[in-house]
Image 1 (cartoon, helix red, strand yellow):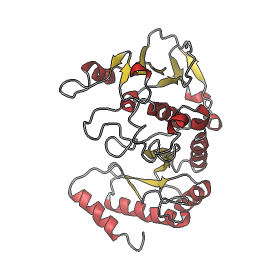
Image 2 (image 1 turned 180 degrees about the vertical axis):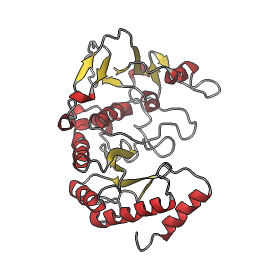
Image 3 (image 1 turned 90 degrees about the horizontal axis):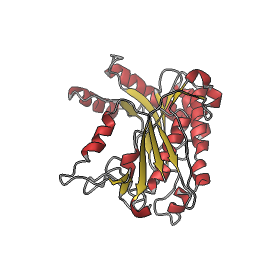
Image 4 (image 1 turned 45 degrees about the horizontal axis):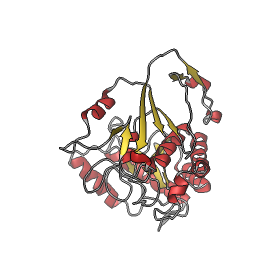
Length: 309
């Protein structure tokens, strides 16, 4: 990048001239490890990110409005990530980003089976744990984050269905367990795994599962469970960095909570109609989200429990 960085500089200068507010910059896409069609050696990538950081600081001298520099925006490879962060050094990378496609190709014949298999879903914990450990090693240099999050390469027959939530919500919880601060779903609209239908813009089932702080997923086809839970507070002083997967909770005496139950219409997990507390989540005649659903986002931090039977 140090030899061919003029295009990047010109692009940044253009965004500044237009008054665009840029949150962050990344160098390339899926160039880490074995790459995806193309790759960059970790040492070279680290050097290039230093050039990118200096460019950002030069063109955005005000720390208050200076965009972040993130990377490497690719698949996790322990050796590659280690070298990259060692070469880039302190104060360069503001956030470590990595990609998750743990269900594999979207046209896989056993994709539905994988989504309902807890042991398969748990395998990706190795990636979360690896990224957490490597970022923890280089603290306070970097925080954790995703810049791409998707269930597979393009599961057009599964992603817009109720069944995809088994994967999606489980992965959100796992990311939180391993101290990931940010994720971006690929995508809001477009491609084969959007949160909104690409033609009608009607929300897919996964859309209704965002924003909950506690979730229970029942993957059993023939068992039901009784769950008793009181509100809690998470005391960080009881959470050691070496024990991130086993947080210590203290339960308080709050008596009230709100429960939101998501179910598939008629029990068809491959359908696209989701019920929230037995109410069908379909747009109004004017294609708006039902008003009472909109009001949920305005509640003053309720304790929310999401059940997916």
